[in-house]
Length: 380
Ligand SMILES: [Zn+2]
Image 1 (cartoon, rainbow, N blue to C red):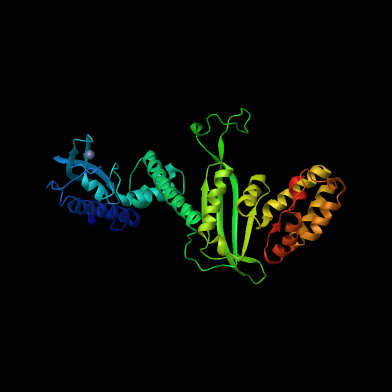
Image 2: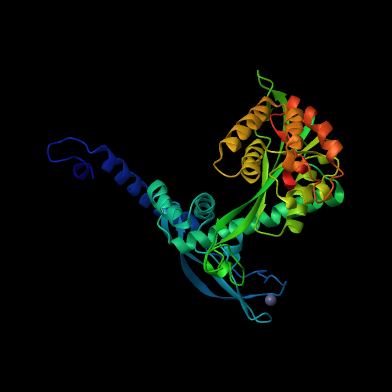
């Protein structure tokens, strides 16, 4: 092997060498793993039962090839049959977490990891490049979705327990608990949008709205007095589902994180009505804040509506309002908004929360670098 790794001139091609040696080590590892795996194929037959608890009888030994982190390995194990259920029973597959799959737990973990971070095809390419594991794109998809489903079931159980039993993760209590959520369009394949109306020219939907939320805590501020998110204290939830379902999801997560022990609760979102609908239903009394990014966007949109797009007046107005926003001078900003002649009409729906949010605004802006929601701003 050394001879192959050295170039004719005697110099070393390091990259080719390290990859060749890794491949060779995997081969050696595969032989070793096969020995360990097949050291006891079972088959003594005593006391083997199917999942329903019936006695199963030994039939023969059967092999399947499994993909492991050190390559393909032949796995030979005892096969039983349950006459009552009419099904095969393979105790070793159950013991080694290999039921219904030809991928080892180690490979499935890696597939789930790449499949959760990039496209399934990119994940497949990375698996081969980084770990020397060759699999098909479809397999990455299937395994990643399986891992996702398992995580979802686990998360749902925990959130359900938090809501029902008031059981929370043992974290120290915090002064401020933030809940933030938003929706975003994610591109999906055709069968996922069948029967749904979209925004494209043909009326076909190419995306579906995924809702994402996070819960985090904050205890400290930086030298400028801006709040700093506590390190490693953010947890996330997300799903493609309607607002009603998502409300329970994010509420469950907040409960799990100790909603009831938080001295102050802050909900951050954009101006979308469903966001404030969830806030009203599940987080009444919370300080409601429109995040700075969306507040800026709303101000720019508003100036176009009032003064016309691309007009000098619109630009001037926006610049002045954004300056007030950046200063955190939300009270003045609201005065400017209300003072604008075209805005003097009453909002369609009078907002009962206005006085609460106004009070919260000064409070929130003094300590948090966000801007509180104001109904007249949102509804125009
Ligand atoms: Zn049975």
